[in-house]
Amino acid sequence: TAAPSSGRSVGHTLALLMKQHHEALRDDLGLSTPRLEAMNEAALTAGAWAFKLVGSGGGGCGVAWAPRPASEAVAQAMKDAGAVNTWIMDGRQGVHGAHIVNS
Image 1 (cartoon, rainbow, N blue to C red):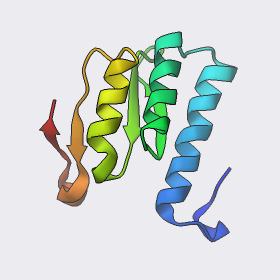
Image 2: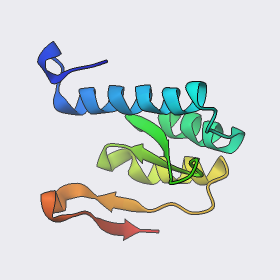
Image 3: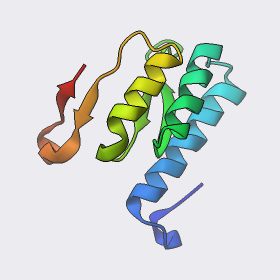
Image 4: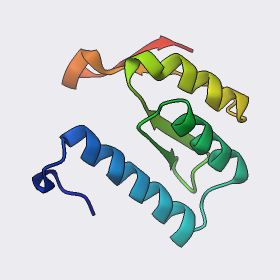
């Protein structure tokens, strides 16, 4: 597993941990679906730093973490890959919470 003390930035470490967790959920627990995997590939190809499946009771949703300039392309790529809907959350609100930029 990646650790911030490894000399990597916190952002890079988070991306690696998201990737590792997604792979564990997919490979070890069999929780992913072809649609989620298509969204994963599309998000990463469009410029996302990371993607992982999420959702209580076995997934069904995915979260992509992307730089703001790539967010629109990532959202569209995920829709093109089968996402029913996407939301762009702007984290500039800090620890007080993100807000939806568009849907």
